[in-house]
Length: 201
Ligand SMILES: N[C@@H](CCC(=O)N[C@@H](CS)C(=O)NCC(=O)O)C(=O)O
Image (cartoon, rainbow, N blue to C red; front, side, top):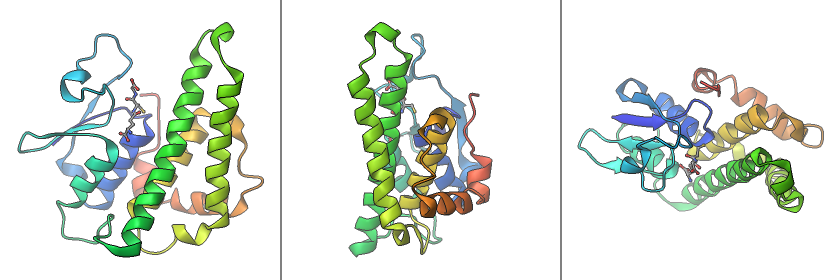
């Protein structure tokens, strides 16, 4: 399988953590791809022009990260990161949406910050920050949801927080959220998280 990714992307990291946790990492050929490079051919794999994109061994091209992660999870016989049904499934999918949504808000904040200063819209930046803080408050107030058998939910949350620390170190979120900070520190000790820490490549 061929994974188009960037070593900084929280969404691609989710796929890589999933691959490591499910024992499939050795089956992934990782192809570094710069989605914002004007000359990239990424659009031929993913019409949305985004990473991650996965080419499977039988020639399917899959995106986006929730689809790729669930596909990988279907390929192994061990404990599943996507519970098959019931409350556990909805909880895992909801947490994944929360983690991805925090990353989406962080991406919007970052892209706005990269615009020339006179074109930056402060209210829009503050709105993205409010989303991130609100999501983190929800996690802090329901911290037990992150415990229990590993699912894609906590993987998404941890990959998102790792990226927010990497790109938005000024957010200073830990002070008011000691439970989330402790959980993240412990989760970050997993070999899958250590091996996939974000870099600028
Ligand atoms: N919902 C997508 C988001 C992927 C995404 O936004 N990837 C970023 C890189 S971290 C990207 O490729 N952006 C390029 C663009 O938006 O043009 C997923 O979960 O895979």
